[in-house]
Image (cartoon, rainbow, N blue to C red; front, side):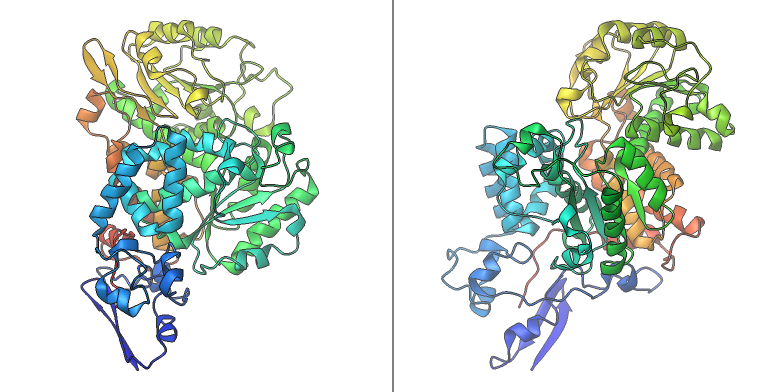
Length: 597
């Protein structure tokens, strides 16, 4: 009746004209890229680790095929495919290459006048042709990453209900308690390995956006594919809609979520718990990335589930890893070790406290005790300096509270503590004033200034301000991108301390080795891998992170480091291949068209 083979990376199906074409396609054509068994250098297959053939679906025909983004190739369908798959007459006669299609997309993008228009256009492309979408992003990542993610995604979330075109992902509301597994099972892809989930309460620095926060999981998962090669059909964005306290959304007729106050307490916790365990039932072993939960929930959920399931919180651990990577890079200019310096954080939420915890881990590796390492990390929150005399501190802050007089001026804190680095994770713009930066320059030859709040409107200072008010001596990184700056006749290239350097590679490393849990040390080795990818020339030009076009290569470095750590700590569940780098490299999805006949 039919035969199936693989020739030159193409799936080839030979069949008799009188056979049932859809039935034969059901045998092979869901997950064309994913179903190939990738062999490591020791001859073992990745079937159990990543390529398990568990997702099989019928290849649609005719107009239905053109409307399926997973399989649609548009004008790139060959003459034979058009005849075989009922596409004759449904497409213009010219057969285009994917390179020509990319050219068309870029031409149309150039005609858009705003980044929001470009965001909507790219989302439409993703809805029509997934392979082409990822090809365009992969080849133009530096130009397009700010469109599909920060800073544009922040504005997109603010307008999500108004630009809504086509649903993507799974929405689980508080009214779905008791049926979460059923909702997850409705997703058509069955071999899900990575889930990004949010409840929308703390979207970037924008606050409670409820169900409109779905733009964040969608954007993050696109980066998992572009940067680390995780197949798009292995990922699932999820929003837990428990209402919103955002008055604007409660009164917006186009808001897509529940128009009721946010549910908290035991009922909320029960929904999250049901979700976590439903994932284990429907997608066993899938990595769960918690994203943009409020501080009060983010830390306790991470603590509750980190030793029970494969999960991490990107706002806490991913941000920490990318910040520490920047510190490692800065040390190559300054000299010494982390434990030689003092770090002052403006903001004591998920990002700040997460970074402090990872710094403590790194300094302990350098030989300090935990208590000694914490003495190097200081915090200034919305009340003032975090010190032991305060009685309003939560458990996470109190671990970093020091025996020191209270001050309520950040500038005064800088003058008294004389930190090597100030790290902005406050979500409050313009907090690194001229006076603060000049004070940093007075006590440091090369002050480290990280303005990490995003989107751009929330940045503690601009790159130009950081350089100008420190005499051009700052080692600067930001949460959102800034243009190059002229400093004393030289061009400096301020780099975005973007979590994209970390979480995609961590995810790929976890998937490649079948990690059962994710440890803090995995994020430390990830930080070291990112810093190691920064060249001497990068440092000379002001870059503390690798150039964005290298992010896929850096993600591979991170994935290898994370997998090695998993094997070393007995957290991996898959046999270790002889050549881990080659093995993971072969697992990475490539956005290329494959022949269907």
